[in-house]
Length: 337
Image (cartoon, rainbow, N blue to C red):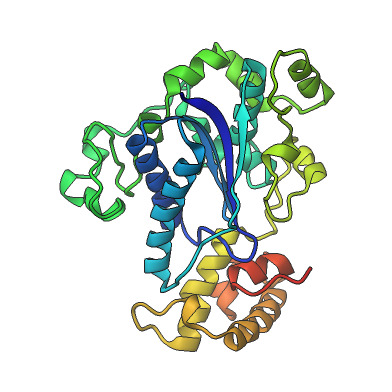
């Protein structure tokens, strides 16, 4: 019998997604898993180091294994990598009760906001938030002329996996979220577009937990700590502050930093031979890159935005900074706890 679960899959020592293309393939692998297992996807959110999924499925462990295997095969093939990707344990929490489900949906749909990447949930593209109430918010799916022709779809799907044509794919190779997610079911939970907007903009306080305690359910109270368990460097206090729409534009995102590493620094070390990736570098070479990038970022920290004297400037990232933990995970160097 299908039950509702929140699933968090995370990685501590390296990022799961190094580029927009990885984010696209990550969602497509999730979509393939949903369709193959005949599950019902309710919400999802992809961050560089982890992903959140709310799904109704018969077997959450099998669901996780299929999703992880499909994406890991893609990632390993693309970057010349081998072995398990991410932490061995996935955090799976059963959700029972309408208030608990609504709370979990809110957390997952507001991932970009909670992690300080955007000022509103709707500005973050790698999650389900823009899939609901599209007509009410004046949004629309790509028209037929802006969908990827059928003959190219296989480039963005797992080999030997056939996804029916009714599940549309945009020009970037992304299966449309609104086709995969059961938006009708979720819209019933939110009741109206006005309430959805309210839920996306509300501040988390003690009432969120109080409402759940009044609900008859043996499943855990949904909190931001529960949702983010297993996520590296999760800071509950900062996440709640980020709900105010605070965006730190001076900090590079992991995707920006990975682009800087992959497109500028790795070719400088190994040349621009096709197929050479960060994973072809030794630990010594990556450690040297750590010091070099750290110095370049510092030199470009107060440079003019148009400055192109450093590789950081050439990537258009002058004026931005990185943290030590961020640089280590994007270079796949061991954490220093």
